[in-house]
Length: 167
Image (cartoon, rainbow, N blue to C red; front, side, top):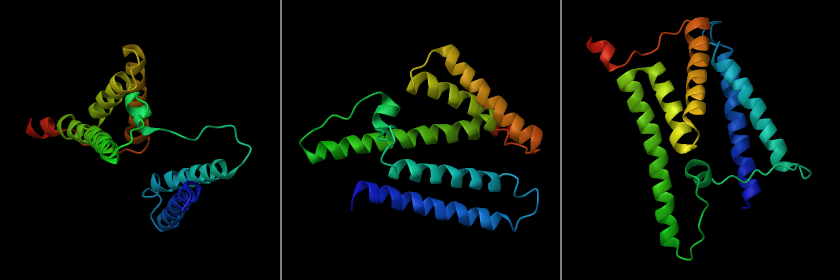
């Protein structure tokens, strides 16, 4: 199977999933569908845009993204032995899973809002290698956006962290 065909099949599977979610959320009450319905609609639009870009011949966008280069700033080194490739892919997968586990641990210990600030700031500083000021601006901006959207507009109470339940 060609890589383009596989990409199209995955995109179509996600498109069907998001359409199903959008249809399913219409049966919810008005407050219950405030978040999932707009997310599903935006996801449908983005998947359709991705399908268009993947299949149009005259696009000048480079859609070939190397996850190792994006996450770690390293280009993939071509090696002749398949064992070394498998070992590198396992290391990248473990690094990706560890990033998710660190975020979940931060949520458990600090709570959702402080964890978002610490994680986003750390991600931009240590993985993207941005300067501290830019990293802090992204962290504060993300925190303000999440707080305004969920706490102010949707009246969602976030988990306060393990220390809040102890005190």
